[in-house]
Amino acid sequence: MTLLIGSLTIGLILSLLAFGILISFRVVAFEDLTVDGSLALGGATAAALIVAEWNPVVATLAGALAGATAGAVTATLHHRFDINRLLAGILVMTALYSVNLRVMGKSNVPLLSHPTVMSYADGLATTLFGHERIVQLSSWEAPGRDIAALLLMFAVAVSTGIVLFLFFRTNLGMAMLAIGDNSRMIRALGVNVGLMTTFALFIGNGLVGLAGALLAQYQGFADVQMGIGMLVWGVASVILGESLVRSKKIGLLITGAVMGSVLFRLLVAIALRWGLNPNDLKLITAVAVFVALVLPKFLSRSSKLVRRPSRA
Amino acid sequence: MLEVAGIRKTFFAGTPNEVRALQGVDLKIEPGSWVNVIGTNGSGKSTLLNAVAGAFYVDEGRIRLDGIDITRWPEHRRAKLIGRVFQDPFSGTAPTMTIAENLALASRRGQARGLSLALNGSRKGELRDRVAAMGLGLENRLDNPIGTLSGGQRQSLTLLMSALIRPSLLLLDEHTAALDPKSADQVIRLTQQFIERDRLTTLMVTHSMPQAAFLGDRVIMMDRGQVVHDISGAEKKRLRPEDLLSKFEELRRANQLDESAAEMLRTQYV
Ligand SMILES: Nc1ncnc2c1ncn2[C@@H]1O[C@H](COP(=O)(O)OP(=O)(O)OP(=O)(O)O)[C@@H](O)[C@H]1O
Ligand SMILES: [Mg+2]
Image (cartoon, rainbow over all chains, first blue to last red; front, side, top):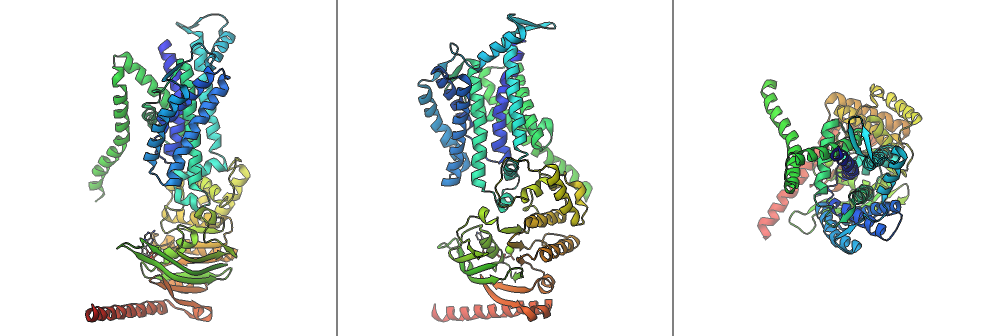
């Protein structure tokens, strides 16, 4: 039960990562590799500030802002200096490794002895369940603190999703959506595509940084390695979400990103429970993404092969 | 009013692939005038339109629109003044977005885009009226993704989008060339309707001699990056497609002559 709640909570935190990837990879069709770096940057920044006894909410938002800045740098390298998108992302991601070490001063910062946003979960647990440490849910029991953390992260993920959805209904957000769909058209309608893409990567990596900041506080430490593989993880969640909602409508894609992230996390937890070696996890994730990317094309090609003779 | 003075554009300058796409084009278009552009493939028609729209900066010369020098304006800034329809029906619309969303995007062409809702009830009502006025029955499909429409329907909507806010200049680049004859007719009729209703200053590239002869009030013919014929006024009113075809024929002969002359020079002097 604790395992299930933990997976759900991490899945919800990482749905912010999936939102970020949805914005860069889908909304503005920019293959942004900054993500591994900006996630760790968000975690590192928040952790450093929390240790310096900042208010945890402010520290978390600072982590998001740091991630956002990293995204804007990647976009600027591409648009201002004509560096290939992938290379721009790799440059920033690589540089961030050193930046993150500088920010934290060491490779790992424990947070357990400091007040973090998870302390709010403790407060919430007390209001909800009184001083019972263990809560009885019909026949299951779970620590009240974990349930409160889950509720808190659910609220964060859902409200972020709603804000994003509303943003994409505005004039500004709709113009951003059009970039990935037809950048030539939206430029002819007067949108500065370079600037708008920079803004999109700012928002996207801000969400990734936010995910990193929350993840660090949830797991109780920030680590310079915490971003490794997160890009692929997020892409996997987005793809899984897309296959669940089967639509290109932004509202459904946002919903799908949350569902995909949570489901993916659960699948991984189950696989680990069944004895999957954690060291193999990233390999398996990569293969799963590869299959998800290739399978639809392969299927449509083979179905065309089947259809062609009947048309003649 | 559009004023193009002495513009030149060379692609891949200084390489073996060098293309002198525009070699000194001068053109002045009066407000409300409709100019058709004809010419053989590769004569520089699209390059001229792209230069005016700002897809690239010209190497030399000036471009003024409504008295403003826009030579160094980036493309997105010129969009405030210019509406465009491309040849490819897929270029002008965002396929996964709905008809209403596409129109909402176009209704802020060249304006600041802030955090107010793009499509509220009254906005949608106005857009529905504009679509209904085209008479294609698309007003009942405002919430369908535009990608589900036919090429002709998409091109009609692109046309509506380009004129939703009145542009100082409308650029049409073979915008009916990719359509079947019936859709092409329909789009041309809409084009005429929009241009005449709003007195739009228009530059339209076409390969259809009947279109060039019977529509608009001026025809220019391009060849090798220059304007070689400019027909307007009474002469344009009398113009028939055959006259234009014979101009092409003349041009072909002159070019052949040029080539044989060049050949002669080569054999004698090289
Ligand atoms: N962006 C570009 N980069 C390189 N070369 C270009 C570019 N645009 C046009 N050209 C070249 O400039 C020349 C003129 O092309 P342009 O497209 O203007 O011809 P056109 O008159 O529109 O022909 P068509 O009737 O085939 O559309 C061609 O040789 C073309 O290859
Ligand atoms: Mg052309």
